[in-house]
Length: 187
Image (tube, rainbow, N blue to C red):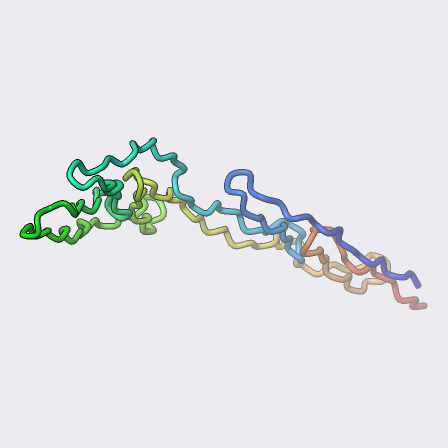
């Protein structure tokens, strides 16, 4: 009797996506027909890369000599929210007004026209006010896998008539690992 051949998959090294740098999972194969059924890799959205323009050095107050506040921007709406300078050289009778409380305007979230998912809320750089909202990437649903029907129908040995073992494939590399059929010696 023949000894069945053992199947050993070669180890696969992890690959990275050339666009987003994330690790891509190794391919997966159907154990019935050997077709690759790996889910597609979808890059995760990232904020837009930007470099803040050079900011001028903060000036000094002409009365007290202290540095004036550095400009700041709201990360939700991009509006300037730099705190005001409270001069220490102001007369004792001067009452400093508190900075107004910043309230972001309400912005309705939009939906993607193709996948109908909510688009990410806008984000802004707190140093320069530039919009750095991550881009939206539609996530497509993979089509359900169905093996061709001819692979599922039982087959019989042409010599002895016994049913042949179902075709089987490795789920890691797609190689056929169907057990070999040995005819019964019927006389």
